[in-house]
Length: 206
Ligand code: TYD
Image (cartoon, rainbow, N blue to C red; front, side, top):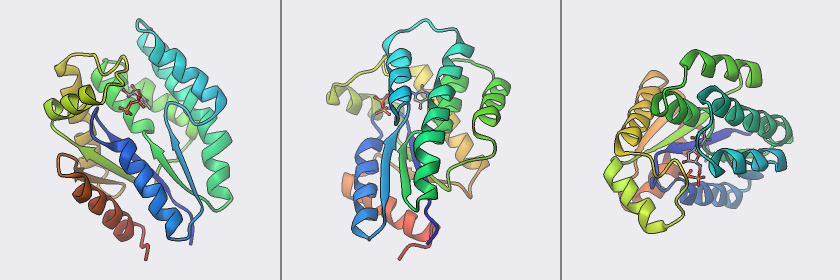
């Protein structure tokens, strides 16, 4: 079995982190070696960059996007690619689709710069499967608010989060072979079932 690179994407309060853990545990239980990781982060350097981007507002838009891709390059080169090469599945909470949704659609950074940074840092590397946990913005923000761990993107206005959601849905529509859109407003067990069955089907897992 060739190991697969699986990413989970979605807006605030979509339950991604919970599903990343459940999916990683399920893959391990099924006998696969698994790396569970997140962005921004996943290596010491990338976690340091996470502190910079989440810790303060007011970045120049290109600088902010470049920081996300610098963290991602570290993560890819030092953790993700070596893990895949060593035969491990990789389950990652967010990847470059988040930068297109948050920095380009949300914050108005240039899509051309996004594409150039993507190519410069990753070449044509991409996830094998991206699960988009889609949830209406009001419901997601209410859930995230109850959870309490608010970061600086969470506090941006409703329109920002609507643009993020529309961007994710547009990306999924443009790349239906890589993306699967799952209804994250459903109860936890139903979302979990959808995550596992989609992985089984799309990645031909037993
Ligand atoms: P995190 O606490 O991990 O939030 P979540 O549980 O919603 O994933 O913080 C990550 C935040 O960083 C999140 O608000 C989305 C944002 N982000 C970007 O703006 N661009 C990116 O490229 C990535 C990976 C994350």
